[in-house]
Image (tube, rainbow, N blue to C red; front, side):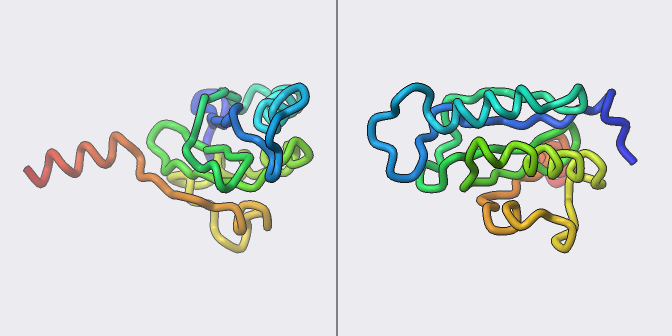
Amino acid sequence: MVDRSTEPTTIHVCVNCRAAGETAPQGARAGAALMAELALEADASVAIVPVECLSVCKRPCTIAFSAPGKWAYVYGDFSAASAAEILAAAALYADAPEGLIPWAQRPVALKKGVVARIPPFATSFAKAEQQA
């Protein structure tokens, strides 16, 4: 099991995301509202980091999970009401070896919302150097 105090999971939140059909936001954009809700509900085991854009504009609101040495995941189709489910999934991610949450354990929103899986950077670079 991962010690979350030394290897925090980062949840990147696109704060520019607009809700589906939202043309001119009144107040905070949907992504910023999700960011605010996650920040309110999160504990010290996660770092909530705003990002300007994750380039998944057709799947708002978009988030990503990452941690040192783990696969990163990008997910879409969230709202501020999804904060508790996202944080529960972040705990599964933190406990999963290499960040790979078994499909059967993933919350439904993550099964439906997965956009991309990105290999750990250090591993990718080390393998590339070995092959050179």
